[in-house]
Length: 234
View 1 (tube, rainbow, N blue to C red):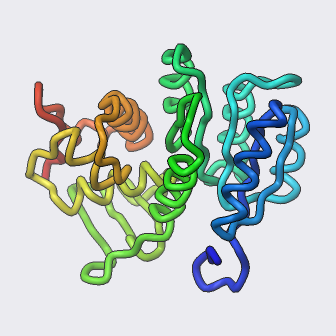
View 2 (cartoon, rainbow, N blue to C red; view 1 turned 45 degrees about the horizontal axis):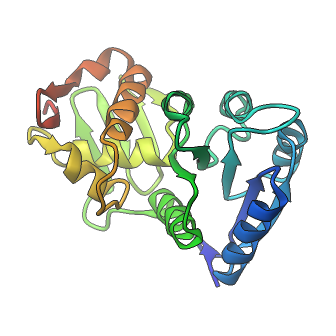
């Protein structure tokens, strides 16, 4: 079974998908791995259900009746109750612009159709793991005005708290841990997203842009090293 922290219950995934065959495949494979699964076929219905019963993760198709996936993502990320729920988008291969917009809105990851059900399950586990990771050696990390409470999963800039998604938090934690050292996009994809295959590095760039915005004036401390990756100033 898959458990959330110390709670003795399976982790719950809300699948927002209007194609019954795809929803059935996702539901079956996730349940086989011990997840509880709730399937919703319309975006507008999904918003109300997720607010009433916040899941551990949302698996969201972008093409939906009632309310499309991007608009649903906007609403979820604006709502305090749902803003920090990890979200994985399911997109068609030709929806590159939508994928970038979704990542900018705060989605943690994406999978493209046609997909391997096994890949989806691995992505779900990886995203959930990011939210549960803890540093056993150092609980609080600092870089200039940035302070990261690793165990508490909280971030402050100049004393003000900043809300980050699980992926943004993991990305910032790694940059702060390795402050002053250049991290290539490939290295970040391996360490933050746990990708070993060739994945579009714009996933990293999009998350860094979003992270910089959230950090405000401290965002300039994340330097772009042209042709290589990123470095956080000590």
